[in-house]
Image (tube, helix red, strand yellow):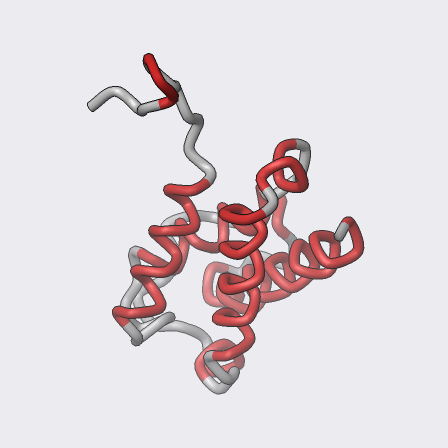
Length: 120
């Protein structure tokens, strides 16, 4: 699973790099958020499944194999999700943006109350 997570971290870095070209960023260290209103043409022409596959795999791992995700480094993926969720022109599908929100929710710290329930 470590290889899968490393691959999707790389994909997230690549997608962030493409998305931020309008900001003049050449690397993630130069990334400026929020992203420009208009996405770069290189980002727009990418098939949506590039992002959807990553989200589906990470959601499945987060829900069904939490120990695998406990020490996983997902900073780049989180940054990508946060950056493009706010810009509907980058990810036009509201269903996809909802999946991103679900993934981020899975990664929130869980404070279990009595009987393993989360306090409301």
